[in-house]
Image 1: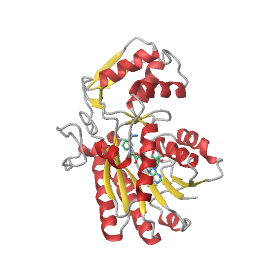
Image 2: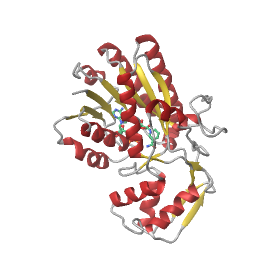
Image 3: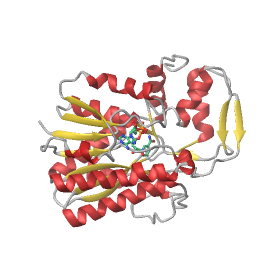
Image 4: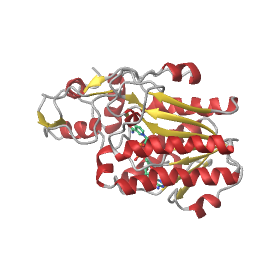
Length: 322
Ligand SMILES: NC(=O)c1ccc[n+]([C@@H]2O[C@H](COP(=O)([O-])OP(=O)(O)OC[C@H]3O[C@@H](n4cnc5c(N)ncnc54)[C@H](O)[C@@H]3O)[C@@H](O)[C@H]2O)c1
């Protein structure tokens, strides 16, 4: 039974990844330090579905703690590295913390992989790396030298270190650039969840900017399928270093997004506008041709359907089933 070391397993995408791997018959050793960016209680809730699974082992700890990595079993097949300090805006207030977790942390994982002769890694990169790219859709061959937040620069730095370890030590790596992921257990700081919470409490929704900024929202189930396909690709190929977008290739403006939420929740719009926030990009839009070609990735959950799944998970019926 193949063994995966999964970092960030108590997080939003990590907990879905862990569930998916266990369902596919993998053994999972997960690590998470319950980073204080959002509540520990939510992360403990995320972990609930896996904790009692016989093939799941949880380690509470920091990826920067080399002693923890060193004590791991020596038959790990693949690393799925999702642990990170997340959130573009708060990285501006704490750039050092973000670099320590996201860059030094990745370096630590790579150093341990080299020493332990682990040869395969799937890494969670981000669409934020494209900054305010003018050309759309964003493709992996676009120039990515102009990030606009410490979070994005840290993710790009990690991609670069990953390449060094591929070049020097033959570690095969797929960097997946995720585009705004949403769905059940979504992080509480992300717009969709915040808006749904405000609407359900009859509070106004705060939009930053004039509502024309757009995001290529991608359903978490599609992302997790992409992660699985990346693991499969690594199992079937030699000498791999790839950067691959995982998006939906169907951007939606902030105004459209919030109107869909009001419609599905059966509420009357009540919107407050505030200026665009530092670090936020104007739009994201993934070119997913490479993901289709290499990973046979095919996102299959349209935005409205994904929101309906989020609402039922959250316990809101509203107009969700109409
Ligand atoms: N959600 C998105 O839209 C999105 C988009 C692009 C990229 N990503 C990336 O995908 C990954 C997962 O994101 P998410 O939305 O699930 O975020 P999340 O914050 O829910 O999950 C990240 C997890 O990593 C853990 N963590 C942080 N620092 C750690 C450390 N030093 N040691 C051990 N664990 C640590 C956190 O406690 C958290 O549980 C991250 O790398 C993120 O940057 C997410």
